Image (tube, helix red, strand yellow):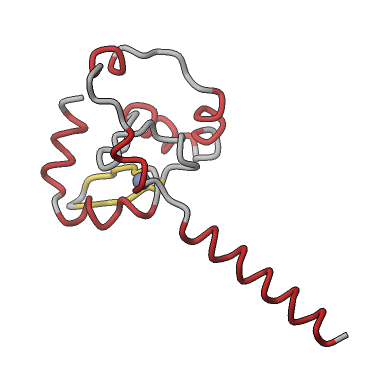
Length: 118
Ligand SMILES: [Zn+2]
């Protein structure tokens, strides 16, 4: 019976590893940048995105909705799960996942500009 317990523990660890390593980084290259205008005027809200934004507190939800995109991955906030809120140089910013935090902190001016000029 001991081997059963060990397998269960292994399975749990594998599940944890999968969760930890899933992120959006690999999708960066897949973003089609040939149609920026079409993306910018997109008003339809994906139900999945709306559901993720709805998990945020009301104040944060409005901020995230106004910001709309993750400045690092260029993806819609909410499309990679519940957006993550950061405060960088006194400014509240949302990113799509934890993988984007390091990049944002390494060059905040660049990403702030991206949000402001979207
Ligand atoms: Zn991300």
